[in-house]
Image 1: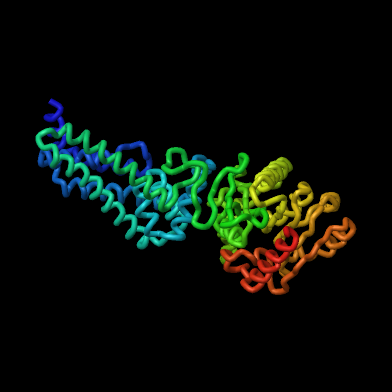
Image 2 (image 1 turned 120 degrees about the vertical axis):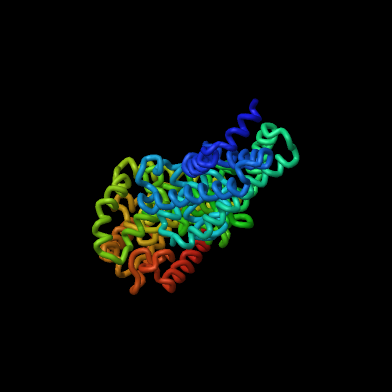
Length: 456
């Protein structure tokens, strides 16, 4: 009776439209059985002769492509933070993962994400939001959809060939085999390409996921952070504090550079819980740096709204607590032996000053273009400070004489370096407008020399 029902379903006019709907919906709702439907249809096709196997593969590929292209279009039209579910920390971190992977290896991630359910959604939305050229996206995403459809159909067809005359049993076994092989493929691809950190149900998510460099994203005493370890015993520890744009790949790269120099590094994410995820921060930074003045002007209300939480008094309390927990972790890291420094950029530079004032375990502070605290807080700084500025960063440079005097009065060992042809963010090599390679290289050399001397 059930076999007769399967035959009737396979031969009905609605069979292929139903398959299309299931596979299409699977692009948005990962709980829908798109993969199982393709496998089952292929098994029925081989057992019953209908629908044609070529039609099953064609419809599945077309539906998968359509779903991916719709997700790409949604990302392009609304971005990655329009709706509340997009701003949840776990989802936002998945978008950050997708953006990083798309930047590093477009073809690999578009193919591999096809087999990791939520990663597929994150990658497609992020590709659209990042304005990846549709021709390039469509080539790789379309190829991935075709290969996926062939792969799923092959499993169903193979099982049906091995168990002829029993279509129901072939369907059941083919689905089990497809799910098992899919789970194994998830594990293999996750180990190779990583998985969206913190997304419930994503394969391979555990204590942390490996980044593209020396470090990994993890949780440090309740705080999400990027942690990079040197290959040998650490020569000290560094708390690395990001810019106002959040824990973006540039900061991870800086952490990896410090680790390559022998330091254990923790870069806490201070902003995602305030709504400025790395993805949101990257979008805000792009608006702020847009060459079109009308775009920059139009973005000002959004920038003010997004950054408003960072100006609340309780935010500073929470940020300092997170930073001190990073110091706690470094203090117990084998080999660090109390040799701990703080380095920060912009927003992070300001908090580098502040952490040095609030934690006497800090033995060296290196703020890049950070705003110095008030005199009473400066008086609490108990370590040497090496600070970097660009001469065109007028607000900070104009205030520098007063900062020098206050530091001297508090007997703080304060060494400011001002680069005459640089402005704000000159160290950031992802900022094509502000980056000054020669000054950045000099500041990096000075920083390493300073840390080597103070953490000896």
